[in-house]
Image (cartoon, rainbow, N blue to C red):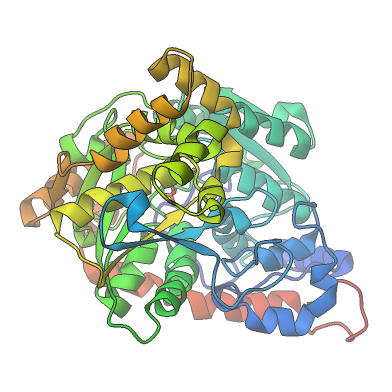
Length: 506
Ligand SMILES: Cc1ncc(COP(=O)(O)O)c(C=O)c1O
């Protein structure tokens, strides 16, 4: 396969290009860069024992290769230190209006981009480095996304000394572009495509053009199994640890894992949790673009999700629910959770402690959508205080400050006060109902699975056999055999550890 093409189904566990491999390994060794193994990111305790103070001294937002060792869920609130239990929120019933425990793991503790999408990016590039498929001296890593994955990709590329190119729709939040402008080595490495969140076809078209140059390597999160594998191996166990911590010695049950789907990478954690804890899996999308739910399409502002297609790495046949949430909910609750008026309402009228209220800033737009879907499911399944719904906050509110004024203008006549906060809270949280929620059976799973045919076979040229292979649950379980294989290759690629006193040693 040409370097410029992405690999929808071929994955390697052997060196493909030995010369490139050796040159890259030598280059990294010279720069003191050592790649972390997936097992280390899944359970990073050993990293901290080994790196200790040298990692603590590194700014989590700096382009420093040691930040590779923070690409996991166990960063503490300072984002410098290690925490045994990943940072999370347990939302109180006064906030959610339901008795079930809604548990949210916080993604804004991840380094450099403050979202877990940096994990997906590492999961896609690392296998190419350790097989010699990617040559940092020659190739450009092209990261198509609606904003966070491409930031993760640019961050990973930069700290590894590779050239990274971000491809994203021009309508994404100002904060995303400002970050990219600071991190790319050349402004031309930000490629703006027409539209906004759900215009993924336009991103693909731009990538097809870029792929004509063999020096561009497209790392398409929507069909890269590295994204699936990283989340199932790393995010899954992190959520399990959070759940076990919250459960303590009670009889709390992990009933559902809820995740708004963009590339569907995060949903892979659900496959892990279902095996370990028996929890069902719910994919969330925007009501304005209900592709999985109704074969629908449309524009929306829940940035990062709902891209008018079924991702190739979505294990549809293992998905149990689809829930849609209107963009208006996250847009308005972003105001409630992050303004003085909204916080005043939550503390004064709802009796929620001010510390808990401040921590709600850990929820970005898609995270609020996850919470709203968790509330809908809790009502649908009639969950009680012994039931937990697990979900993630992919990013926090810091990515959406400029969206607040837009939301106030669009929904609330430009004015946001405690009365408006009460209206928004009543409408979107207390009023969350069981509408636009589908419990999947064999036929509805088939319908969603088959919908993917038009993107992947007709539009993107995947063979019918490769497309259909993903119907089989064993296909997805077998993917996890790459974890030990790649980890062994990472060890070989890194070479022997340098002396204990070498700076940057891992
Ligand atoms: C803010 C945000 N939320 C949710 C998602 C969806 O995550 P995934 O692509 O793993 O499905 C993304 C993906 O980029 C995102 O940026």
